[in-house]
Amino acid sequence: MLISATEVNQTVGPPPLRRPNSLRRSSSMQSIWPEGATGPHRLVGRARDLFTSPDVEAPQTLSEDWIEATLTPERLLASLHGSRHAETLGAFAGLPPGGDLRRAMAEEMPEEGKRDTLLHRLLDDMAGANFMASSAWYDWEPDGLEGYYRNIGLGSVLERPVTGLCLSYVPGSEAMTPDGRTNEDQADHPRAVSPVSEADPFAWHDIVEIDAANHWRLRRTDLWVEEGVVHADAWFQDSSAVRGRHDVRTIFHEYGLRARFDPAEMTLTGIDVDPRVLPFGTCRAAPATANVLVGRSAREFREFVPKALRGTQGCTHLNDMLRALQDVSAMAETFRKAIASSAG
Image (cartoon, rainbow, N blue to C red; front, side, top):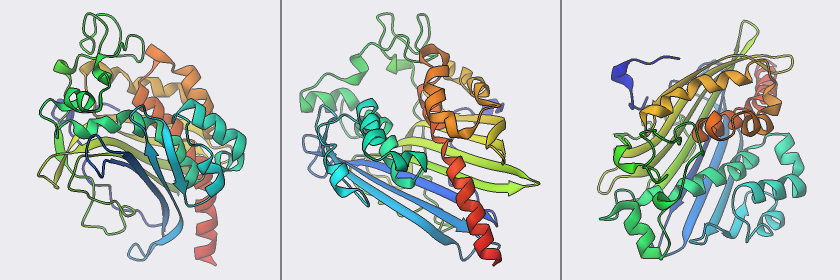
């Protein structure tokens, strides 16, 4: 999907109005430091499935899940709690969110992944949220991220080599310094209105606003059926708090997309990606990579995307969003049941 020059690096703002006869899955991962930069890093996750009948003023919450984790400065799980599987989640302490945690999830609680549950969505999202968490300090330290990492005695993520990590990190790109680091001097992280809507009290699940440094990773997927086609409108954003402001946030990544599926096998028949806020101009080559999924079932997205769009073949954050689009398979079944129940 092409966007006009005036829309480049502009957020879409609050979510669209809920459609009659639709299902909205929303999730949030909030990184906070209750004791300040040198204290424990807490990650709080919440997720909800909300069904909107023809009476949009009386939606129904179908399911909810939550997780809370404490992480070490080295980004390892010190503790993990959740709405279900208490003993299993507790045993994941010591693991880094990402590949190790996902393998443990697949072994110890495979049904959550097979059913694409809200709990699985939150646990799967811990990797990206943990990676981006330190951006919470972008506006809260005199020296930004460098100041935060100096305070905790670790090297800044901005000093790490990034060559080959994504389609923007190639030699000669504006996104990289000559020695292979992120070229933060060229990055654009605009400030924009908070996506939390006051116009619709049901637009999001409960998202806690904290007057301190914090990072949010928000997701929203709306699903409905029209003329026998399953439609999904999905949105994703990474943002951090601005000191002294509650109405705006610093936006690091924001994508939207529209996808269409054949309901029989949940095969993707079309997809349009809308790159709203991205750090570099070179990132805007990413939307076209999503077409590799056309013709494939949503049920295989989590496994297929990292293989098909590895490294410079894709965008790290769009890949993450495309993996999460696998949720529409389970959402479609939940939606069908909700429609049948409301009709009965």
